[in-house]
Image (cartoon, rainbow, N blue to C red; front, side, top):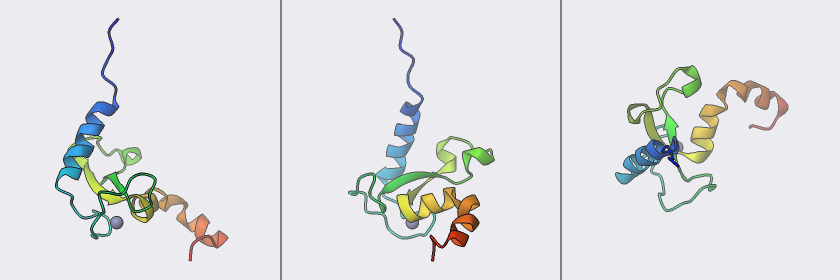
Length: 91
Ligand SMILES: [Zn+2]
């Protein structure tokens, strides 16, 4: 029985490599508290500089540190933002 390495292995390595130097958020530029754990809104997440659905690569060169919310989530949800704004959920 052979087990292929899971796709997430490289992601975990990249994540650890990015977190190692504890960089500031690549989106808002503010420090990230690396002791916070998911799903804390201000926890560290890996952001794809060019989103995967826009053809961005899933490689270390296209990754940066970001806050979970609002930075990364806001970026991901940008295409839906006008709808959310109209509904009054955002101020
Ligand atoms: Zn941020």
